[in-house]
Length: 524
Image (cartoon, rainbow, N blue to C red):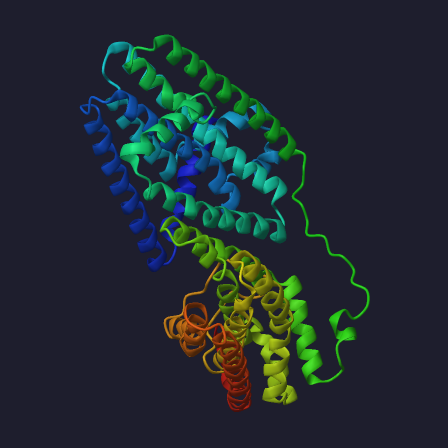
C-alpha cells in the first residue's frame, strides 16, 4: 500500500514536466534556486559546528526553526495550495482510515519542500555532532521535526479542502495571508534595525527560551541543550516534541475520517430581491453605470481586496519612518494623502475589469463622459468621507487645527488628480487583468501591455502635480499659517481642473477607441 502511494506521488510530480516548455523552465529554475539555497544553508550549518558559541546557535535554531514549522502549516492554508492527493479521492477504494492516513503522510515526504528540509536537517545533525549523546538527540530531533512539518502541511491542506472549498472562502484566506505579510513587514524592518550587540541578544534569548518549550520549537532546542550539557532538559523537550507529533497524528486521523464522509462545500447562491443600486440611482446612463460600479465594488473581490488594503498601506509607510526617528506628530499628516493616492489609483484600469462586458457600452453607443463620470462616482463616495474624517483625525493627532486647510487641500488635490488621470488611462491604456470570478491575487502575463507605464503615471502623476500645494502647506507650517488657506484654494482648484480634463479626455478617447477596447478585452 505504501509503495503504491509513493508511485502515485512520483507520477504526479513527473506530470509537471508534461507542461509547456516555458512552465517547465520556470519549474526547473525554482528547483535550482531552492537547491542552491539549501546548499548554502547546509554549508553555514556545518561551519556553525566550529563556532564554539553553543548558546547563541541554539537560540537561532529555535527561533528560525519554529518559523519553519509554522510556515509548513500557514503557507498551504493561506496560499490555498491544491492537494493533488486529497483523501476524498480515495473514498471509494475501501482503504482503512489508518492505512490511508499513514500512506498519505509517507507520500508527503516525496516532494521538493520535504526533500530540502530533510537535507537541511542533516546539516543540523552535523552542527550538533559534538558528542555521542548530542548526536543521538540531534538525529531524533531531526526526524521529529521532519515528521511534524509533514503532518502540519497535510493538516493545513486537509483543513483548507474541507473548510475553504468555496471561492469566497479561499479569497478571504489569501487576503488574510497578504495582510499577515504586510503586518509582519514592519516587524522584520524593526529586527533589521535593532542593535543586536546591545539589546538584540537579550531579545533572542528571551524568545528562544519561550519557543523552545512550545510544540514548534521543542525539537529544535533539544540538540542545543544536549550539546550544552543540559541532558535532562533535552530529554524533556524531546518528549514534548514526541507528544506533539502524536497529537498531530490523532488529529490527522480524525480529519481523514471526517473528510471521507463529508462532501466538498458548495457555493451558496442567495436570492437577491429588488434592483439594488439600480433602483436607488437615477435612471440615466450615468446612474446606470454608477449603479453597476457600486455593485462591482461591493461584490467583486478584485475591487474589495484593493479597498481593504488601502487602510493598511499607511501602516507600512508610517512604521519605517517612525523607526527612522521621524516625530510622531509629523507622521500624523501622512496617512490620509497616501490613502487618497491609492484610492484614486485603484480605478486606473477600471475598463479592463469589465472584460468582454465592455461590448454593452460599445454596442449601445454610450457617451464617453457618462461612462467616465459613472465609474468615478463610487470612488468619490468613498473619498469624500475619507478626506473629511481622515483629515480631522490627522490634525487632531498633529495638535494644531491651523493645519486643517492644508490637509484638506493636499488630500483633495491628490485624490481628484488621481481620478482625473485614472479616467484617461483606463480608456487609453487598458491592460489585461484577472478575469471576473478568478482570484484577485493572480495577474495575467502580457508582454505587449503598457501596465508599468500606466501604473507609474497614475501613481506618481498626482504627487508631481500636487507639488505646488505641498509647497504652500510647507510654507504654512514653517512661516505663516495664512499659507494654509492658499494651499486649500490651490489644491481644490488644481484637483477640479485635473478631474475635469481627465473626464473630458477620457470620454473623448472612450468614444474613439470603443472597438479597440473591445478587442483588447477579448484578447486579455
